[in-house]
Image (cartoon, rainbow, N blue to C red):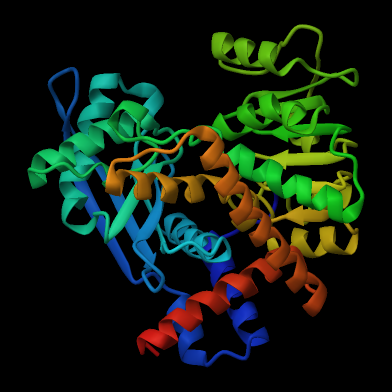
Length: 416
């Protein structure tokens, strides 16, 4: 990819564009362009060889106008402040579009989890909580997992937090193991939210969801969408998948469960029996009905957007489409389901977990799924109505909805 993108600058440009269309005062636009709080930490962690290693860590809290900050914690070697700022802001818009009472946050630690033992990862998780403890809480900021963190990480963090404050408070982190206050329906919530958005788009645009689909990125979200698409719709043929090491294709279809077993065994989708190897980037350009970008940022750019053939692009990843690509896809009449809608299932069910933790009474999975469906169906149609009313591409429509709601809350509070 020849373009170089700063995700935070992209986000600021999106806020400015939405703000102008909403005729917002310049001061509120400027306010929404920046995080309200940012923290930087250095974490000394004892490694298995007895040496102490210093890790650099961050927590960004973008906005509190509608509720406590909410967002994941990443363990990744290439974390930087601008990426985390952009992702924290994305959480602000995502919770606003879903119309749930939360703000946006994001955290990260610069590390390579693949080179660390479980003991080292636990030590790092606990060190992070010791650093951020004063700035998180059920009424301040509620973290959750993200890249290379998981429910076990949240369990370690919750335990460290409760050890420090000396009281039980499981709602301080979400996507925990169920025995520690996690909720039914959380593990597949992101994929289910995407499927709800796809269902509504197929109904609206008369597209058959039981046709072909491709998944770019075979991490947690990609795996779950591959496994659940056909079950959710009563059909659907997975014909192409990629991960960081390559891509595979079979026009007759790929068995998602067998592919997952292969991935768990070998660490990649490459060399899956019966599949044809393809370049990982070419999976984005497959002739399919539905494409699920499920990897990292800027996967669909000005360079490859003209070659996208899918009728629906459902963004399970955060920020997989660049601004130039948004315009190209809109002109091609390709229906993009932007991340703030398509992958809002995770944060919505995280809110459900917070609610259940607060009064120690837990819902069954059917209840969780039904309430998720109602919230995301409403969010989808709110954005679609804005697309039609203003004749703008879907991401800008979603930003208009989110920015308007945050601006209203900030105005009512008297901030601006």
